[in-house]
Image (cartoon, rainbow, N blue to C red; front, side, top):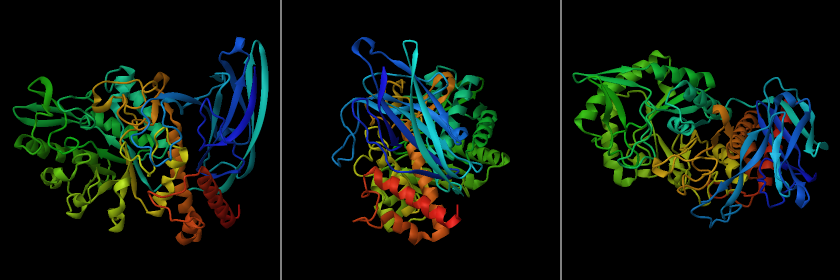
Amino acid sequence: MMIRNLLTLSSLEKVFPDQRPEEYAGKFSMMREDQLAFQLAFRLEAPPEASFWRMVRVKIDSPLAPWLKVFCVRCVPARFLTGNASDGNFLRTEPGLYPDLLLPVGEEGARFTPNCWNAFWFQVRTDASTPAGVHPVKITLMVDSFGETEEYEQTVEVEVIGACLPKQKLLHTEWFHADCIADYYKVPAWSEEHWKAVESQLRAAVRCGVNMILTPVFTPALDTAVGWERTTVQLVDITVEKGAYSFGFEKLDRWVKLCLGCGIERFEIAHLYSQWGAEHCPKIMATVDGEYRRIFGWESDAVGPEYAGFLSAFLPALTAHLEELGLRKEQVVFHISDEPSADHLPQYKACREQVQGLLEGYTIMDALSDFSFYQQGVCPNPVVATNHVTPFLEHKVENLWVYYCVSQNYQVSNRFMAMPSARTRIIGTQFYKYRIAGFLHWGFNFYNSQYSLKHIDPFAVTDADGAFPAGDPFLVYPGEDGEAWDSLRLQVFYDAICDLRAFELLESLAGREFVMELLEGGLQREVTFFDYPHEASYLLTLRARVNEEIRKRIGG
């Protein structure tokens, strides 16, 4: 048993079992309070009679060891890859095994299969105390085989520049599906086991730039078939006695305290009306004269007097309690309905008018694509699909948010498993150019089929049972013992946010015009959401140049 072809790769390479990856010959540099990743790819070669898995252990000798973690890149099955690959910017479009899961590697090492390509992922996350300078990272791979150990060495140099990236300004939310965590681990909602797993996934989200969280005061009215319902994760206890409402906020208090402790800074309250049109109410559970039952749902009229009466009692109580917890109004966002279309505009407007007076001073925002909602003032805080963003940019909408999901599959950035990592990371450059204020994605941990008709195992089903391109429904895997395991795509998206912070730091030192010249100078066309360099080398070279310009100006 031996290792052949030990290659150093950038984080933008995806290592498939059947294809030799492209070796990276450039330099690795980063700031303090930054993230950088590289990979070691290799083939374990063995004769036919010994072609079974082997343990490979990793030893690190480097001044950066305290800031370095090691993962093995695991491939997962991907069936449905995209609805439209005609732009050509996909790695593959056939079902198969795709590299995505980053499995933590301990002292015992990791299992690898011989006679195919494998990879380790090395993640360096610096802080303000990380020493500046060029640091060698000496890596020893140890293969255990028939009582003997073979060792293979590779040294990678990483330069740490003595300047801290500024605090992230971009507001970033990935919709957090607490019910899916309970369902996967088969534990009661808000049991101690559930809270433990929720905390692990919250910390994973915050580590990768999520600073706003979907808060299920009601079970979110998202991705649910009409007449169907998802596992109840309602944080607010509701009691109805003789027609009068009262509210218990104990679970919500624990949620807010936990989120703040993990690093979440803002809260978006689950949608007050059903998805795709706002015609119905979310599922709301209550104890009514001693009986626990659903009091609103698909059968309820969204603008009927019963629901209006409930909201007139609930929203003032909720906002007063959030303020008692110390949350400022700018830290809380409310939603009406997700992705309404032009046909839904009158209904959406009626729902907004129903609650607007109860939410004075709070931001109401929604994901939508039709410019008329903004143009008519019905939704002054839109979150716009990246493939529909042009009219919003042309009208210079301030504090603009963007999102993408399953439908953003042609030309624009996304993070499907079949896409190159460069297509995921380019969005940091686009955020900077267009001064984007926030980003939203619907699926941090959606472990259901489409419409939540059944639960799925995300290690085996990565496309919501054939509904969404593999990778769209979730960014994090539910690991052993409630531990969250990252995806490669989650890390690469955070690299995009770190790029954005580096651009902002250089702008503070050299001006925006200088940074834009680095971004677009030498290109035949300007960078847009639809048109941008596809090559990984563009992003790697750009970030290296930005880092060098910062180093020159800080003298370190």
